[in-house]
Image (cartoon, rainbow over all chains, first blue to last red):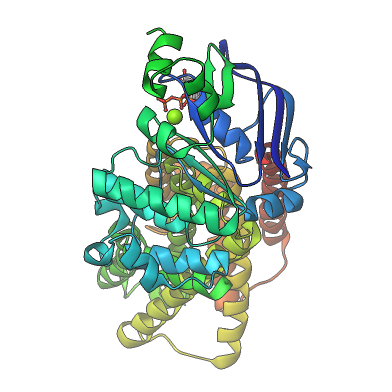
Length: 239
Length: 248
Ligand SMILES: Nc1ncnc2c1ncn2[C@@H]1O[C@H](COP(=O)(O)OP(=O)(O)OP(=O)(O)O)[C@@H](O)[C@H]1O
Ligand SMILES: [Mg+2]
């Protein structure tokens, strides 16, 4: 089943033509990595998929809805089925970690036990800290924990592993793969770590010069003669 | 849902020292302080200090709460990216708005009670149930007016620093030209002219009149009501346009 269908997507900020015709599809159950250099337009692309950014041209269909000119109430229905991590992530500064989890649990009307999330994401020592006072990595982890409070159809993560130490990174990936296997949910994420793409993603989209220069399965790329995704990236993208 | 949101909204308010100082601390302190200086004087309409300045300071608290903890707070959420993150959560905009309206009304009502009690304890203010009910009803109306105007004004700000500077300047302007410091009739001419354009000055006069059962619908009062009503309509109009732009 198609979860996302994007064709000829264009987006500029003034004279900065960031996306100049991106085509993209996601089937249900896929884990797709979006890569490209700093400023290539990855976050812009993901925020358009999240339905929170206007675009200039093209078609974007998310969960069977053409999001252009969708009335607010239908848009809210689409958003209900998506969980996200934004770059950079921000929450109410003066709430404590546990309070944030409780508040978002209420938003999602989630049956997931906060205690379990706190244990899984190793948040116990930070439960009573203000979000604002956490280190960058822990903010990121809280943001991820919140994303996993619900079991969405679609998970969109903008650089979820940036700032995480190796243990937390492994923990997060086991969470993502477990969610994906168990619920069949679709995951779209960006990362600058090519090993993660190789290990965990079914498909890769490379955004370069405003277009999806490559959009292929990870296996397909490796089979075409590259030793690793890292080598593929270095060969495809110039500085 | 609304209950949970409201609970955390109130918790967040109580943790913002800046809001607390400007809303729950400065106005009551000024009320007490001015009472020590001018408590014995008689004011327009043959009213005592407490009869004039109790409604005034309740209105001042209402103003600071609504402009800082409601309006300025919206700008903070918008510019720090919190609004963006929350918009991706399955909570409706209406719930959030309703919660922040209820929050601000709870806080201003608390301010109402606080000033009222100080007035009764220190400045011989009398309590009559009927006039209390009328005054409180009028006070809720003033809340609605200020909420609408503040939303419209702060919807223009995309930057926290400019919103902060604006808030502090407007706070000063309101204090001096709204009749909260000295009676406007004792002020220089140019202040009196500014006061005529300051809706807070008119709301203040109306509230004092309602509080003391002296409201008569003469030309001045009708003009003031018309002026405030016009501002509310303009504000509603602005809000409609701004909301339409934000969708998507
Ligand atoms: N709100 C905005 N206004 C103006 N320009 C923007 C805005 N957001 C992004 N840009 C510009 O668009 C381009 C793409 O930005 P984007 O954040 O999508 O890149 P990215 O691929 O996510 O980069 P990174 O890997 O560093 O996160 C950049 O040149 C950036 O400066
Ligand atoms: Mg980015």
